[in-house]
Length: 324
Ligand code: UDP
Image (cartoon, rainbow, N blue to C red; front, side, top):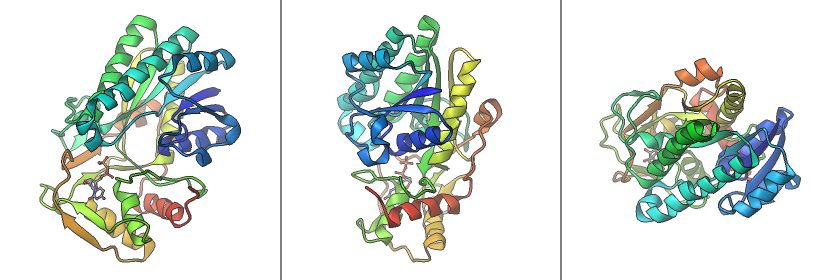
């Protein structure tokens, strides 16, 4: 198949591109390189552009016959979304509408959309299923939920087929060691732990030790980025014989606290992690753990990296010799 991967130079997008190429598919990457890395994708497949540019998208759709679009373009910093909500709604919602309209005009009717566990807000159950109420507590989560709702309307009105994948905590790096997680600023736990060990970042801060969890620190469900990629391809296969707008949670179904992640990093690297225990970070729910049951049953999704130590080992491999 031939795919348009919007945001394909970003962390998850670049792993997706590599996964598709390995499986023998054709890929065009469309990315404005605002946060992505040119080095993370093959030069010949890269088109630099903005999903808010309908004219450029129209030209791209005229040049290629895509079987599906994967849409990874988004701003995703929770704190920034609180201070700059217009930026988030413009970027994550309004620009997505331009992409959707360009797809409709071109007759491309399959989309995989990157959604997030942030649509749930403060969870009411330990294991979060797709039916869990969606009450986001920040503009980032709101913006993703808005797009989920637009996709549902688009299925009814225009017959757009879509799968929204709600990622829990994407982590790890491709085992080739050639691509990995490199955000600026880096806000995520695992890269911050590893960078602090390598002296590449500031000393690690742990945000909050007074949560109602087993050790007082926040619990998250870490999913390997290549397992997220495999779910996207399964989602496209699912859309070949399913109409409508569908939603799946992507997680391993097992939560690890911040302290447990630090302990795993110490096991994997053989080094002791020193950190400052500081106040809670605003907007962090105590626990976010997915039920990945629906994705397993309906998509046939089978994560390969379900052990935290393996996820960390792949991330460590990247961080010790990052290419960008
Ligand atoms: N966290 C931390 N120190 C950091 C980064 C994150 O203690 O430098 C905590 C954060 O408060 C949360 C968990 O680690 O409880 C995972 O945070 P991350 O930003 O990686 O992902 P999120 O769950 O916010 O999407």
